[in-house]
Image 1: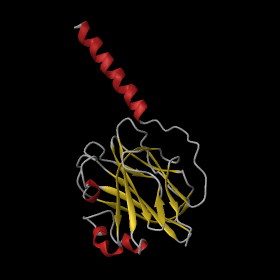
Image 2: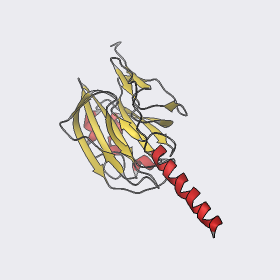
Image 3: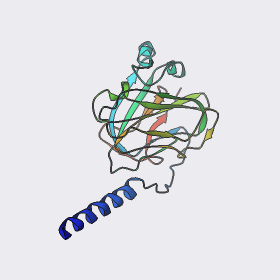
Image 4: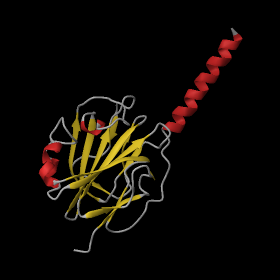
Length: 206
């Protein structure tokens, strides 16, 4: 019987240590600069997709990120998906400074976050931030285990680049929606860090 108590004590301690580790929220030295977009999450780049304006139907509720967000990206946009494992910090940060002009929660499924196209069907929160004439989006996408996406900002708020905006419980996915006048600076398979890794730079040539 003593053997089982010892095993139980070890299991409880291990669970406690993992919980403390998982919910860690370390301070960050936020990357500074103009005309840049930072990663909103820690994790690994799962995909980089580009959608033309003519593909606006992918933005329909139940088929992609949000209802009617295509109006914010008239010339198309990039979507970068970041997979967060249970070992990654799960705090989401603002990819850019600006005013929050849109937030929406969309009900959906809870498929594993690493599967193909789950960003189209899983439950999610979406945020659109306006910076100058540009609009940048963040989508918190739930997964099989991570069934709760917490968003701490609302429409009308002003956020600073790198500011904490929410959290996703356990392994899941965060995506950043970037207008076509930016150049992507990361690649699939790369490790990125919220508030530190530059994922895109504005094309100021034109």
